[in-house]
Image (cartoon, rainbow, N blue to C red; front, side, top):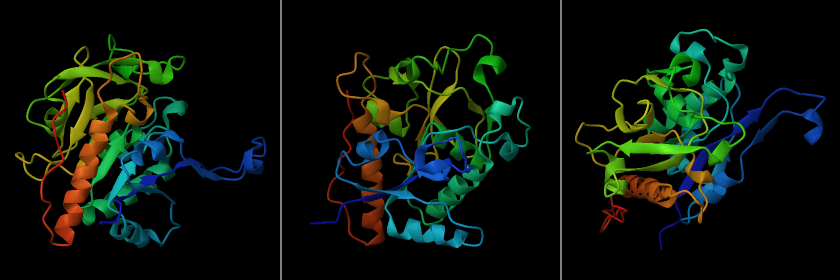
Length: 278
């Protein structure tokens, strides 16, 4: 029996020592929302939260990539606009420059070893920026008339329709539907698409990009680096809203990891488990 797939996922930071914070006496923290490992383990994978490394140790990120089957870059604070050549238009949009460097180092290490990468929300934006794109620092102020993509009171219950582009990996998963609903918890979005990226889904009302992939060739059906703007890990079974099935997206990630592992050990996979979902 093959060993379970192993997924590493990025940490969220509380980097500053803060005497006002009672949790752990204000010491710097790495943390993750419980929904993330629960989601990633729901199909049998083992998960590991990946710590940031000190200056001069960055080469050890490749050790993570060698020992794991895939990487998930999770949600969190804004990406610093410094990375795409802008200054923060508001102090609250300055992002977390140090966390960006950590996420970018992980992304580079896993891509160098051709290991699958799945970006979620901030991870979606980080991948686009790291690979040469840029962001709207705030959708509402920079794109008047756009949808409300983030509602602090509604949070994960805020949702809207997306339309899946034909011929991409999302069409292979959700093609029978063509469009559906996702949660929406972001105030920033893709402005300039990174070179080599393929748009997989958009918000039909305002054109905001909601999913991307980075195929090795224009015809590639199963790209191993991809990202979505919504939070599939927040979508619980039995929700009142008819969301796109989050388990189908995870199944895709599991599939590409299994394919890559099989190629690495020179053993063919007998048959794809990918089945388009109605």
